[in-house]
Image (tube, rainbow, N blue to C red; front, side):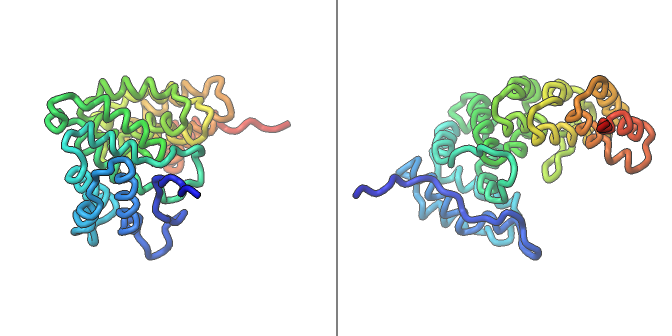
Length: 289
């Protein structure tokens, strides 16, 4: 009987972090072994042993985001020298995309090194034979966000290539995959938790408003929640702008959009800001007769 074809695999991971444990444990020896296994399937010349040594060296004291960057450097050292060639190997090593948006657990953090690879090397023509790697990097972020999230890498592109990146995100707001649509809002948040801020959007968030307009009535709560959180970020620095957007949206709003508005202004409302309290009143759920 023939043996089944080898498949990419993910390391075992809990649904939530237990008390006393660390997210860093998600990128441990087992994750490195899975990463090497998947890459070797896509690139038979891959030096699994050498990669393992590079990946494990100095890993111990690093926190989760540091581990992602450390493993990205190990990938760079052991994959083809040209960025797009290395990226092609990475994309061919991926497990299938998610078909749901909830209950995914922490196993998705396996793809943090992949995202970190794009963040570190995805805008450097010198590492790509002199060719602009933007299109290849955006394709990679599209695929990675369907398995984890590309919000951490996307922020580098919004800081260095704002116009091109925003134009692509506006296209993606119409994508059939909710993970991709959510990235458009979540990745462009001015003050995304865990990630570096985008100073230009903290100063002036108006360039992201077309993305929020396109997504405010998205069919997935997963996406609408991100839009609400994005507006909440804006309200921290530009409350009048956030309240103006919500006041416009509340006119003729569906129950789903009303929830989004209430969620967006919940923090200023807790602090008694009158405009936020008024908006929550206008967006109150309809009474059932």
